[in-house]
Image (cartoon, rainbow, N blue to C red; front, side):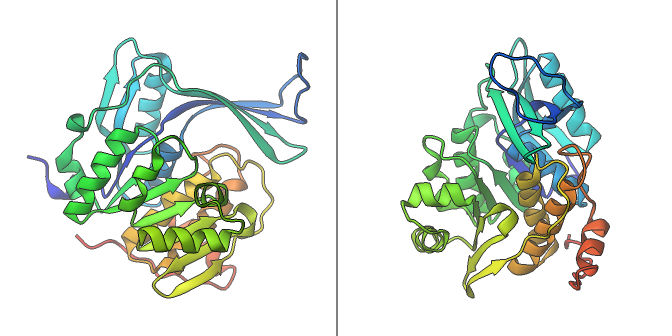
Amino acid sequence: MRDFKTWPLMVGIGSTVYDTLMVVDHFPAEDTKQQGIETKVQGGGPCATALVAASRLGIPAAYMGTIGGDPFGAFMMEDFRRWQVDTSAVRVVPGGVSFHSVVLLNQAASSRTCIWNRGTVEPPAPEELDRDMLAHARVLHVDGHMLDAAVYAARECRKMGVKVSYDAGGTYPGVERLLPFADYLIPSEEFALKITGEDTAEKAAEKLYDAYRPEVLVVTQGVRGGILLDEKGMRRYESYPVHAVDTNGCGDTFHGAFAAGKIRGYANGEACQYASAAAAIKCTRLGARQAMADDEECRAFLRSRGITLEHKVWEE
């Protein structure tokens, strides 16, 4: 039987992607050829990258899902292990083509453009999920992918007292099924406006909070910071200006760091500060994962800006 101390504290069900990242000095015109400046191959995907962020911040994390038995999948499995994300609940599908993408980073505009292919791998069925692993977690993190499995796991986690963190970045068909189970509901401004039909982020936040009553609602607004709404009311949290080298994975880092902060016992506002610091640091370096900060670097970044967060270790 597995020792309870070895169970991951954060479990993710959602997207994991093989990314080919290419830096260009300007966005290419259609039907032309252009030399790239730099190329990196890396693991990506909102859920998977958030798990790596949490692991980098000292929180034991695990991915639960399916991956193809192709070279893309082999790379992603090795990359999880590189960043110490538990893969014991991953099912590898022989002959399956894994989710993959090409990302162009335009230096002139500090923008990113992503072209993706979902591949052929079917998501796990609810009965294939490791319920024991879910029961021992502190947070289940979902991103709207592998939806049936995510909804089932979120419902079970709600029953077991495990917090559910929902990275609501895309309005995929059926994702509203996850909303009632989210304890940490973190939509992008685009998602919040689209799903509520409201014309301001503040109105959208109020509508989502009133409808679903999460423990905390955080509407992310990129470089503008965002909106925090909980039982104490609505207020803003700030982003931290930095020289952005690569914004790819910035939002995913925020989500992973927010969950990590909550596992460590931070209040909602502190968790937003911690997550904003992690996201800002990531932007200053190339790569979605190798550019991520650890716990000490995040807290040092905040201290340099007059914010002191106590180093907290989760309770057993």
